[in-house]
Image (cartoon, rainbow, N blue to C red; front, side, top):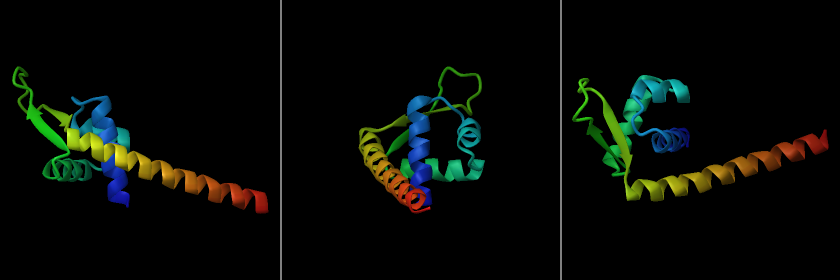
Length: 100
């Protein structure tokens, strides 16, 4: 489930800023650079994102991450799962505080 959360957060990050570097994504999400790279490659293999170089950039190591239609569908599913989990956590915390 943790990896699913990481992939969800990376998809959210990409949708906000497709030109963000892996380092920026790593810093913003509090994940290691290796974890971000691993997740991006997994998302690419699943067909959820495309990775393309900036052709006009002097720094040929810059990439843009594009969420595919399949990726948008998966992001929506992950969003629903995430929200259900958070609502369940909220309900459990509410019960705990009421019983205290």
